[in-house]
Amino acid sequence: MKFGIAPINKGVASPDDMIAHAKLAESAGVESVWTFEHVIIPLDYESRYPYNASGRMASEPETNYVDPLLALTAIAAETATLRLGTGVNILSQANPLLMAKQVASLDFISKGRFMLGAGIGWLQEEFAAMGTPFEKRGARFDDYIQAMRKVWSGEVVEHESEFLSWHNFKSYPVPVQTPLPVHIGGNKGKAFERVARYGNGWYSPSGSVAELSEHLALLRQACDDVGRDFSEIEITGVWIMRGGLDSIKRLQDIGVHRLTVPIFAIWPDEGADMIKKLGDEIISAL
Image (cartoon, rainbow, N blue to C red):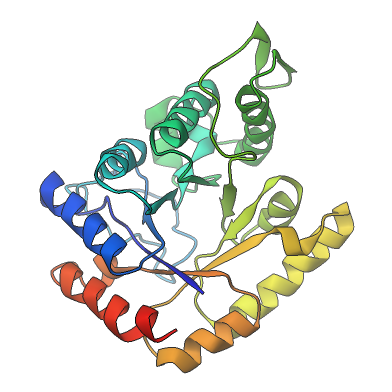
């Protein structure tokens, strides 16, 4: 089992703290750090957060959300083996050509340590602020992933679609990794079909064995439906450091490959202590 910590970029008091936590994670045997993304937090919003019964996200408008790619670039410069993931970036509201360039550059700078976690988004007010239509965000996401892979190929890009008109150009550097891992987040709507068609991994917001088992069955069926080998997909779940090694084994037995621990969401003032605990009591024991 691999372990990540998240969100390394949210609520940070200073860049020094963020870097120190990342370096401590690397020394503790943590495989990866992951970011969250919101460009803005509205003072009020009608959109419902889909992964909380309240429909509200646990962030105030004044919460520091360091841009994920900038945060991971800073961390890349101060670490050597730590993998770097976005968990997740809201691809449907971004400029996909700029995103493709930034992603390839970060993988280049980090010498092949980047993982793009991407989702379709849920906060309509943020899309409006970004000047991007909220409608058809799923179709836009699917198109963007396919188009971005063409950019990363290093070949001449030709991509004409409902959303994009890209012709007769190349973009370098290309990613070090081939393919660059794309982890698609979420468990609503067409999420499983999207992972089966376009993902190298699934970034789940759940840590429940029962819920993950149900969702993995749906993902396996989605893979069968499109002729995809389910074993190719890396599964990332959530673990809140309860249940000890037995709970980890249960998650591993159902097919989870990585667990992200939301240290800075649950223990914002005890980050260093919890990273050490994860390393000393869990990772070293496996």
